[in-house]
Amino acid sequence: MFELKDKYAIITGASGGIGAATAFAFAREGAGGIIIADIDRKRAEGAAGVITGETGVRCEFVETNIGNSEDIKKLFKKSLDYFGRLDILVNCAGICNTFQVEEIDEKQWDRLMSINLKGTYLCCREAYEIMKKQGSGKIVNISSVSGRVGGFATGIDYATSKGAIITMTMSFAKVAGPFGINVNAVAPGFIDTEMTKAFTYFNPETIPLRRAGKPEDVADVITFLASDKSRYITGVTLDVNGGQYMG
Ligand SMILES: NC(=O)c1ccc[n+]([C@@H]2O[C@H](COP(=O)([O-])OP(=O)(O)OC[C@H]3O[C@@H](n4cnc5c(N)ncnc54)[C@H](O)[C@@H]3O)[C@@H](O)[C@H]2O)c1
Image 1: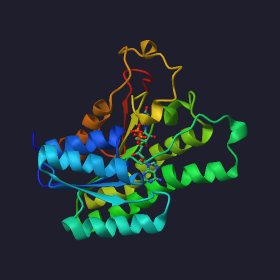
Image 2: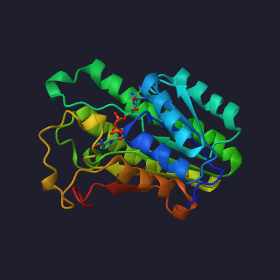
Image 3: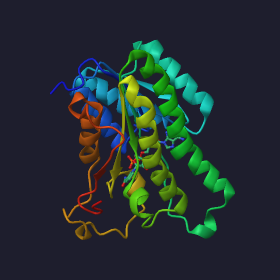
């Protein structure tokens, strides 16, 4: 309990699924304040309201399109206006698809990369600038099992973005380490969220732990990486997949 006491966090893509479960977990661990940055106003405002209502922790929504660099700049400025500091960034915002390669044209490729990859990079950069001055900070990125082994049913663009996030995490960890900033990632397997509703073919019995993951299964690992318990871990991508892939 209270692993994140008085820590201030931005979580992108936290209107539901893994991001919202992470925001809840942070609030339960005593976070000082949380910002949910998301494109879905209705769902995100709902999540922020429930978190504050149930835990008493201040949770603010900042409408943000992670595919838009101006929105990202405003997000980080607003977070400092709200809380005056930034201890944790979780880059959870992402889009997924089940497109065949014939459907992934240049426009589709650029759209997905601008959210999943460029958006994650720009958020890391903004957080790095703030945390560098503070001399501490934790950044957690969200990769995927598809970034480890290629997409199962997901598009090549999605799997590529998630593979690149593993490399970006290692690279950022090297740059940020000397300033007391840990940069890590999680690579979830099949997690039961809005994103995977279309994946009806999937049989959880094929997973060694015999069930699909829950958002909380991932949120707990993100919380560990955001806390001081993981202080000597950086540049690592932790697999949270029930044994679906063992590296
Ligand atoms: N569910 C899984 O099985 C699984 C597996 C591996 C990785 N992931 C990754 O986990 C993360 C969270 O996904 P989830 O499963 O919780 O699904 P989700 O759809 O509930 O969450 C995605 C979130 O990102 C937000 N979002 C989408 N586009 C955005 C944009 N342009 N700007 C800001 N926010 C945007 C959505 O509104 C939503 O809140 C994603 O990065 C996803 O790729 C999920």
